Image (cartoon, rainbow, N blue to C red):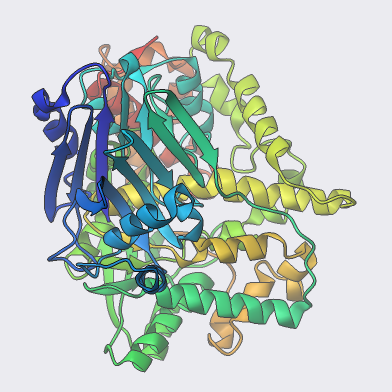
Length: 614
């Protein structure tokens, strides 16, 4: 995994501006701590920071290859899980290779098949290829958007980067935010509308999208999206199909030239991937699998079960590590560490994020990095298989808004009246919801109930899942750790998308078809464990600490957030006894303490990034 950046300027000689390229590239040093490289020509500059995973000695970037009289240069962030098959096919067509890395496979695939090469890739990726002869840049992003890619057309240039910070390092781009950006922050955040870069001069290339940039301009094409088809397999055949797909994608993602581990919570998803990893390691003679789990100081004393988090992970982690014989590494954090990490988590995202949910993951990844470079995570299973409570609750299904944003009116009330009048937060979220619903590919003749469940699945896959994938990428890469997500294999996502709801919930259970698929893979008690989300701290000291941070912000007349919020209303909530209630402010994990931490992050971001509101 890596960080990529660069820009095109048709009006001047970029070889005279190598300093800007170096600055942009250096902002991504945490994503790629192992090596740095740049390539610059008259009108195109490319930068790369490398985290070495496959063929560490020979995979340096930018990578240059020649074909006849043509020259191609690539910067690439990601992994191709079908690189071996592609390489064999390309060799059969007369292509030769000088490395074993997938970067070269990707570049040779482009040289052989042109822009349609993306349709052949199975992986997570964001890349840019400069065709020297054609004077054209081709960029693409993986189908589910696991790897990020932002761009800007400020001042007639074309700039791109794995993270906003790389683009913001160029003098042509200003950290400006308008009405839409503020609406994204205050009514949708930490989610983002697909394609929204929040900053006025920034856009995100969509998942499953590619783009060509040349002297004629910029052209974007969607090369993949979810397709709806009738499902013609019964429950048993469906379970078998899911099991084979999950086994195949997990084994593909265990390939690495550096240490691989798994993230284990003792839940259905992480336990399944860990079991498959252990079996694969046994078959290939690779020794023991290392597993990692996260918890918080004194959580055992303060944990209270509720609908969103019915039980704690610790006993289930022990159950699985004992059952599988993994080498387990429990990681525990205390409140002061979580609070301090809110700052680094904000810089990792270049935006306010999921508060302690981000901060704890960043700390967790830093600890994992001490023993591994690649980790396997169960991220996205709930969005794909329908595991969240809101898939099963009428009030969420009938809410006519994003089910993780049921507190929109409360959030709108936190804005200063003039800001609310300007950005119209409730209209904004309503428009974004309507936009999402209009995209859903329905089948003719679907019943209203079938349509509603398809809509809910679509919202989760295209709106909520990207929030968690963004979190996973930013926090892990800020620690120089690559996290792979087998449940995001596009073949699995596409297949499960069309499984009827009554089959998805086989046995009258959430993720019922996944449980059937894993029968015989997991112990029965783990197989039937009720969903429990990523763990967060329940220590009341955390609430006190983040409330103190926010009050310090409110008491500082120079705080940039003060002109944007209803200070009296925020103080009222901070003083309220219900501030720590379990009514979600955003999704399952963000309630009172996370609201305070989020507003603190907003102020930190506005201040440290020098954001102008225009």
